[in-house]
Image (cartoon, rainbow, N blue to C red; front, side):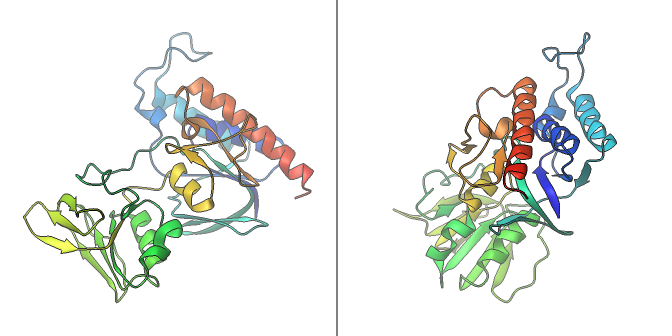
Length: 288
């Protein structure tokens, strides 16, 4: 078991790991997608680089810095997070990891697909959380929009709830999944249709399917996705934290772009440092 698991290897997550590891806490950083930092061509407003630095270079330097002091940094997609009261379980396609403290720092991902009708039917059949809303669709026909490991993980959560499930890849390659009540449709989606609630999906080729509900699981899960499943309070997909980077769930901290506000490296580094220091205090206070 790790003392601390951090999801996200951007400036917030890596900074937090530097503090927890130096605080003698066994620390793991899990990451998969590219950080928003890597997309910055040239950064000139961050302390310590007189000629500036590329986002990609700064990102790689941070990861190597963490590795050099003993942080385990592993590139694996996190598909599921569980709160088991005394510890957290983090699930990836390759295995499972456990920790006493969890720090969310996967940035501010926007995984909402650009499909007509999604916003119209949010809360009226369109959902982003299988654990939160799956029960309301028991014994019904539902759909999951996505094509990767996250979509498969969400589908598996629904297999024993719904009568039948259709994974809609929206033109992407079909994922591998075996279940009697799961179908896959790879056609491009035109829009989600219905009157006062979701009733079906219309495809670009003019065909339609009936569905009672749609779960969005496009791309990989971000901090807001995990937050909703863990009962963490969010505000417009930003995780709500106090001055100590604590969420409303005991043992879970968040830092960086996922908390909203100023989307800058300097802010992410500060919040990462604060989250790391407070995680150390939390573990020592609770004798974990």
